[in-house]
Picture 1 (spheres, rainbow, N blue to C red):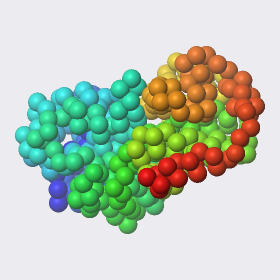
Picture 2 (cartoon, rainbow, N blue to C red):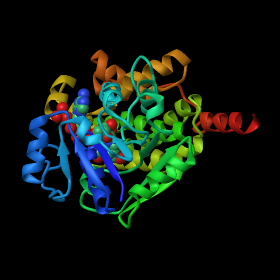
Picture 3 (cartoon, helix red, strand yellow):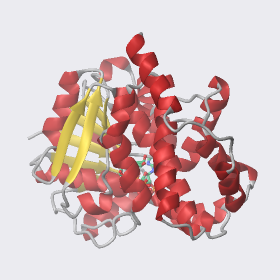
Amino acid sequence: MEKIAVLGAGSWGTALAMVLIDNGHEVRLWTHNQNHAEQINQTHSNEEYLPGIHLPASLTAYHDLSKAVEGVNAIVFVVPTKAIREVCQKLNGVLQDKVTIIHGTKGIEPDTLKRVSEMIEEELRGDLYHDVVVLSGPSHAEEVSQKHPTTITASSNSIDEAEKAQDLFINENFRVYTSPDMVGVELGGALKNIIALGAGISDGLGYGDNAKAALMTRGLAEIARLGASMGANPLTFIGLSGVGDLIVTCTSVHSRNWRAGNLLGKGNDLDEVLEQMGMVVEGVRTTRAAYQFAENKNIDMPITTGLYRILFEGAKPKDVVDQLMTRMRRHEMEDLSTILSNRYSS
Ligand SMILES: NC(=O)C1=CN([C@@H]2O[C@H](COP(=O)(O)OP(=O)(O)OC[C@H]3O[C@@H](n4cnc5c(N)ncnc54)[C@H](OP(=O)(O)O)[C@@H]3O)[C@@H](O)[C@H]2O)C=CC1
Ligand SMILES: O=C(CO)COP(=O)(O)O
């Protein structure tokens, strides 16, 4: 049995904490909101973020970060991307011993264009942790908390750390694979949220399955193009953390990104949508980051650019779809064959 602190008591943090409890670990679930910690401990539920799910009595929520991390062997970050740096800074003041660091957060930081593991490495004191591990794949909290079969990938620059995370989480309902391609696994999880916003918009506009399949497939081409330019192995994008997560996020009503896109497609503006959602919609900030990266590096990202124009420049979703459909004609596999030949000829 290991002692583990899960930082972030939203839907994903709570579901991951439940998996760890099922595996016999002692788990402390930390939230920055004192009332929320009290509510979880009193009711053994997290009605705000995971309604209708009964939490194990042994799952204890903490508001005091120093108590939550005292004596732990591992820390799992599951706060939104925008909170990663702040939580690392708080940890620097309270963490005593070296721990395994795992994160389940899916995003890229605008302006710096950093992945979550890079943000952690920049902020957390180097003597406090081993190589960071990312856990990413098709895994809605709502289904994981009901023990529905789920598969996911643990990736790290250190295979030992990835396997440590695999050991902590794997069970008969939650199958964990490992991958050495940390860049690809993190980018797949972050960038699919952009495409899921687009899929929601398409459904909200009343378009059908053809349009959604097109968005997912051409979206995957964009993800692979951007990912390869950031150093990912393009083959990672046909794995669980790539196409797997793209499918689950673009086709499920559980997805916060799909739901936010759906409201946008129905004519709501971004502020109204985010207000209504009440949960983190990572794709919004990641669209800004990916758009900035594509602009800087001159990478062709038509879907991401269209999303950026809808989210931040007030473009009408229907006009953006029309523009995407009337772009200059081209060869379908143009970029994929270039990516692969660049990779394997060098
Ligand atoms: N939900 C899912 O199924 C999955 C989510 N993810 C990823 O996990 C991450 C978290 O998502 P999810 O759990 O859905 O998000 P939620 O919106 O459900 O919860 C976010 C949690 O983070 C807390 N939080 C917000 N800001 C801060 C802060 N500055 N310091 C500390 N805590 C903070 C919130 O607290 P409060 O509201 O009290 O401020 C809340 O408890 C995201 O990156 C998401 O992409 C990955 C896989 C699956
Ligand atoms: O990443 C997820 C499932 O794998 C959850 O996606 P959403 O944040 O869109 O709900």
